Amino acid sequence: MKVLMNAGPWLAVPPAGYGGIENVIATLVPELRALGVEVVLASVGESTIEVDGRVSVFERGQFGHIQRPYNQAVGIVQAHQHAVARAVAAGGFDVLHDHVEAAGLVTAAALGDGAPPVLHTLHWDLHKHPELYGNFDGGGRVRVNGVSASQLARAPEALRRHSIGHVHLATPLADRPVPEISRGSYAVVLGRINPGKGQDLAARLAHEAGFDLVLAGPVGPYRNPAELAAAEGDRTADGNPDVRFWREKVSPHVDGTRVRWVGTVTGRDRDLLVAGARAAFFPLRWEEPGGTAVVESLALGTPVVGIARGCLPELIDDGVTGLLTTDEEALGELVHKAGAIDPGACRAAAESRFTPAVMAASYLALYEQLR
Image (cartoon, rainbow, N blue to C red; front, side, top):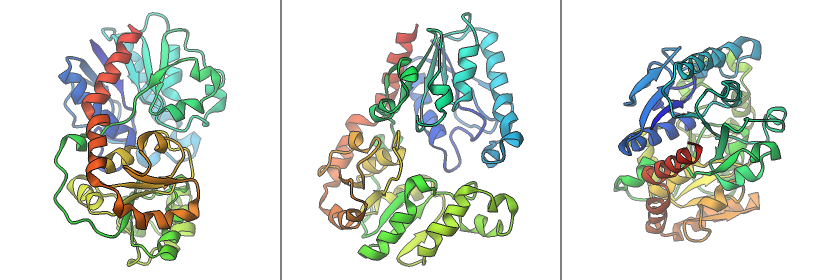
């Protein structure tokens, strides 16, 4: 089987730091190739993952432009999609596996009956793009999958009719030993700092409930405090909604002692930070569709504390691998109680449910359904 894997033009595969979708693809591709699948990657030139072929327009990731005004950024994804369409037209693919929001779905549907079947993976909130999702017709050749059952349940009916199921996310950490480190008393919030992730709530509760908190993730395109400080007064930074959220809602609580922002943390530094935490904290204010950081935390033996919404009730066994609530104000108390959760139970759940091999086998089964 030969698959064209469309990762989009935004970040390399694997990404240097933050990059949810790109990390999913970087986890999936090696396992597919181990199963005998030939994978051609459509991404940016600086991607380093081993594949059987490449399609690229841009040498470097274009993520820094993603929140520019539409009339300045629209050509980026279209240029990438044009190259994908040309690659498909050249022939030889059994499946196009697409991960590009909105434009990927439309391109797939427009390729025509002579194109291979398409699996379009939905990584985001499906309340977005109601005009597209509420009227979509894949012509019997385009199918979609979600990254959780709860995500698909919120999709418009027209999109749900194209679904062939969901595949939970996985993490390579589930195949690696847990770092040997003493567990601390702090909680950690992983992920891009924005309103949906609830870092403002986390920071406020840390002060009110009396626990230390580490915020680990970028603010817009700025990966760490030094980069954000250097952008002070820059009009692009001032116009970025994530930067505004940081400045207005989060940074007033960040004192460097009770609450710290460490920016993007990757590799072993990320593993040690999470493995040493009392809890991985998810004070969600949106319906989290996939939960990459959730499964990473479990793989590192770290209990999850969060709001019971989105995919969290599917991924967490409440009272066994974490503590969930629907009450925002109860979260602070749950952080203190997380020390009673057995890290071994968290790790065991990751090893049985969230390994790369499990995810790849599930996707291979979906590919076979398409053929």
